[in-house]
Amino acid sequence: MSITPQGRSVQAMYRDYRDGRLIVNRRYQRKLVWTLEEKQKLIDSILHDYPIPLVLLAELRAGPHAGKFEIIDGMQRLNAVFSFIEHGFNLEGRFFDLSQFSRARQAAEHGIFAARADCEVLAAQQCSNILDYQLAVTIYPATTDLEITEVFGRINAQGRQLSPQEQRQAGVANRVSALVRQLASDIRGDVSTDVLDLADMPEISIEHEQAPHGYGIKAEDTLWCKQGVLTRKQLRDSEDEQMVLDFVASIALDAPIAASRETFDAFYDRDALQSGDLEAAVIAYGEERLSTELLGTFSVLEDMIAQVSETQSFLRETIRPGDRNPIKGPFYALFMALFDLVVRQEKAPDRPADIFHALVGVGRSLSAASHYATVDDRRRNINTVKGLIQDHFVDRRPPAFTSGAGLTLQIENCLRRSQIETPRYETKQGFLSLGPTRAWNAELEGRLVDTVCGIANLAGEGDVFLGVADKKEDADKISALDGISPIVVGQRYVVGIDREARALGIDVDAYMRRVVECFRHSAMSPELKTHVLGAIDAVDFRGFTLLRVHVPEQKDVSFVGDKCFTREGTETREITGPAIIAAQGRFRAVG
Image (tube, rainbow, N blue to C red; front, side, top):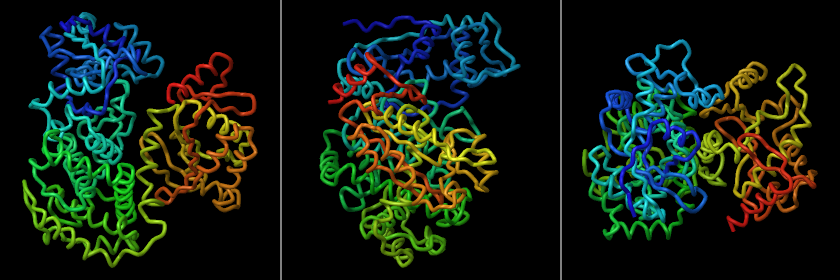
């Protein structure tokens, strides 16, 4: 087996990139984290024909991604090169000249990326030098996911540029590492499938206001940075994942853990006793239960803050007034106190303003440590916080973390996921037209049924949301017509169905029954119809009511009468003959 490096031109690699042949596995790969300066230095090195580190790819020969190349090493470099070609940044004020590269020019003309107009560009010879530059590429014939993970770990575990948490994640593929990574992604909002095209990585990567890259997640919008829990650099270095690991261990082991680098390292060391103990505890607790409870608690906290203040660093200013340092320690105590109240005691916050008033200056009362916190100190901190706020919580059935505010984060992540996994998700602003008559769109009822059928035929689950606009111009019209302020989630605009119910002179329950009847009287396959009717729900999202039509995973192809549908991107398309047989093949593959 030969794994000798070969030269591949930037032009050839770009073709693979735009053909969707370069993929990223988020089980071990970190986010796009390079600074603008790092990207510009790389382009400058290429222009000067300096050597740059090699790119290591795993050639996938089986499974759903057969024929593609999984990036083991070089993701940041490849993204920098392709981003420069696609006008993501400039070099000394000059952009790549798209007229010198027909493939990239065509991508821009088709709206795949936004090209700069009337900008200074590199000389034709410089553009040619970039396109002809030979990247050192090693293609490794991969046989299993475990083998790829092991190779990645060996390459990156000692990497000086990796943060402690990134070093822990490198080369480790077990239940705990997967759960921590997924939970951290859900909390940040950079949700996606485990494997995605390199071209989609910007959508789930993080930037900040002072250094925009066009990425999908703004650091200042995450709970971690917005509330002063972590700095932007700490978020970039994956310290949020370390905090999630801290919560997971404390909850699964049913006791605060001693917070130290050695403790966290041991949880990821396959030969350490602590690693096996935590894995067993997580399995016994239940991964799905732990995920639901932890994310639900985060949702309740975010909803509490949203009801009181939209001010940047509100939580930090409450807990430690006038202190600009991050509040990692106090936040751990607050979260664990809140977890005990809303999950274990099944209570709900009564008046959030009173809760935060009780927390003013609490940071001064808590034991603090820069590198190590004992179990006893952490337990005392949790009890101190809980003692201050518990009188402002009331009994709630169903529990707060499983309904209402507790679902906020889950819904928000579904809306973000809809931007990447477009076939499995659909959003509609509602049934009423945005003209002066506000007429009910009866045609949409049929299209909605077809769309649900199309999602079901992808051999997986998905969602349709009513009360969410996908165009800013529609959101602006709704704002003017109905006097509301839409909530922006990524590239989606939450407008709710409450406004439509008011315009129709009915309540939300009656509106929901009207939608339910649309499916009940449809010609949808009986099994799919039964599943969908049992999965339609009205969800409160920060004061707006959304109608969520969940499409559960099916066992066979579904129809609407004698017609069959599938989804291609954001479009629902009728299929016949061989295409139906191909759809049936998806279900056999899943089974």
